[in-house]
Image 1 (cartoon, helix red, strand yellow):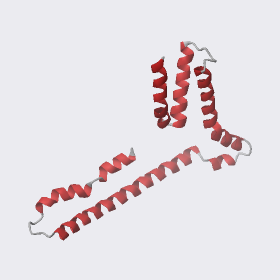
Image 2 (cartoon, one colour):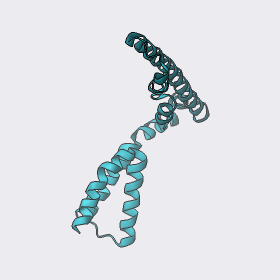
Image 3 (spheres, helix red, strand yellow):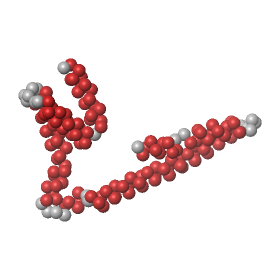
Image 4 (cartoon, one colour):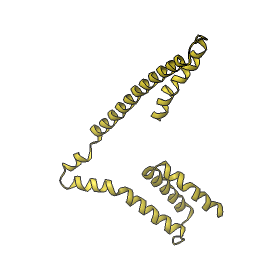
Length: 155
């Protein structure tokens, strides 16, 4: 989202200015001079883009620092002798555990090893969407949806 805002703020500034100013160039102006003006406008655009990029990086850095200050980091957990290491381990292994558990549930469901009623099937759908959505992101859902549509299209 930040990239879209940044490109809207600075994208194509040099071309826009050149397009507006071109009509006001003297008719006898040399092509080299026109190119120099275009280059100057491009340099202004690049400087402005650099400023915007620096501001965006600084904002992202501030957000990360604020999250670390409020929620803590893995180094903070290491100060707790046993519990800290256990929490770091649990935090690190939750994605594979949820992923493999969901794959097992799906395998048992699709192989007809489990006969589920309508309510249980809807719960399996919810579990799949939650695991795919929150743990693996939007890309995972986009990759799986054609398979799901194909599966239900054949039924």
